[in-house]
Image (tube, rainbow, N blue to C red; front, top):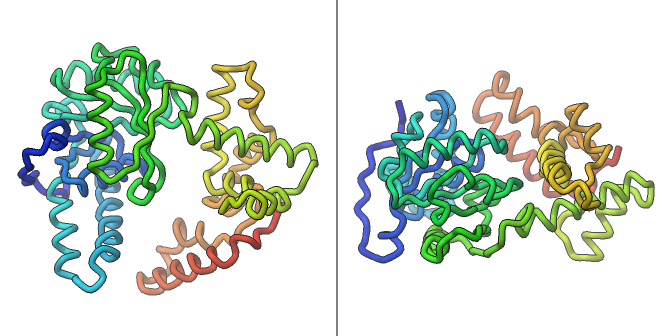
Length: 347
């Protein structure tokens, strides 16, 4: 069922590898496949779990493609070395469609499924019964409470948040989220594993959004509210923050890049839980854009209008272009994006 090979890796006797060597990642989407990839690159035996074989194959193809990119950067003039890197990493990966079976020998389970509390509860209740007592549990949630997710398991001392950032193979940060019940041994194991997969770890209590999103999402929302009030145009808000604060991207641009469906979902969840906090008030214009399916860069339009080449290339063009021409056009789009980021057209 899986194109990944049988696990073959033999491990050293270092303390880090003894703590976490077998990792199960639940969810093969953008985040889950990225987590599985970096874990395998770091030397872990990894089982990636999806709900069906079709989605599993899609996740495997994504990892294979991304590994090829990494190999080209690491082994520019060494094709044999690049091939060896890809082959060895893939030999540490396997796929499964059965979560309970996939955690039988896991040292760590990382959940990266839909941001829905009841769905996560159902999953972790089943995993808590299936996994051995040694297994550590972690959620990659970006907006839900780690403590609430952990409420359904008996091993709260072995539970925490491991929040990665997209794209996982590129972004160096890992937020480690602690709940009061978490043991020091669990925390140290999370830190050691984060370092082993070459991430820079920061620690945070179980506060909404943790560190990055707690600061970033209200910043984006306040910029949108400023625009909604007519205090300043999207272009001027973005230029002000880039030139005045040294940010690489303005908040309105960033909102378009992240996707308005994502930010709207996060803010709505926080608003429902903390209705008296004005920082968590939903933005009406963002709601409107989501309803109109103008989600930002990925759909070609958000608060700004974009050249639709990316959307067309990624969703439509493969049916009408041969592989070489498609690759040529996609590379051309990427170069144009770098050149034109400061020339976006406001609505």
